[in-house]
Length: 69
Image (cartoon, rainbow, N blue to C red; front, side):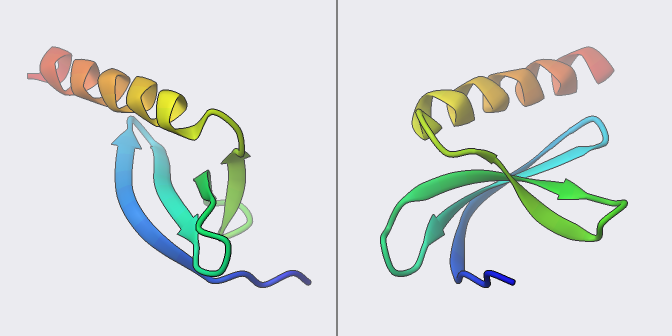
């Protein structure tokens, strides 16, 4: 239905959860998207306070990497 162009800024894997930080090519707004293996597509997860949310997800991913070792 709605197709937007996004530039991928960063990607994370937290366990089985795949996340990516993207920027809309036209408006330069940032979003966080989550991969849905059931739908086989990226879905919008966060639209507001993106930088704060992304920092939190990165910290969680780093903690999980340290625990897994």
